Image 1 (cartoon, rainbow, N blue to C red):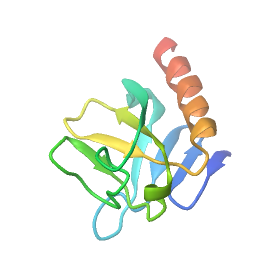
Image 2: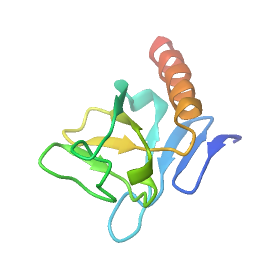
Image 3: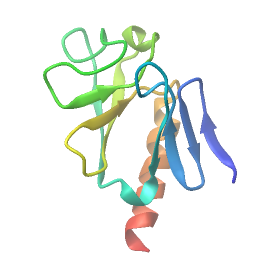
Image 4: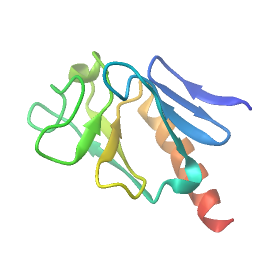
Length: 110
């Protein structure tokens, strides 16, 4: 299995996205590309998640641990069919979004 992207919290390999430090107190979540229904990229700011280091507020969006999130301006929301959506803020947003677009498009056609 080859790694397509990796930073401290996000790993994209050939088969799935792994989000490290997703569960409290520690734990990773692995999402196979074939189970991803939809991805969106959204801006984040003071009122929309930039200050959330880990967890969930009033919306059903779960933010993995990322102490660098207050300095980031965009996030990726992943809908894998669960009520709670996973929100990631990779260090290289564009690279991860392109990988997810490519992998979810290819998985939905197979």
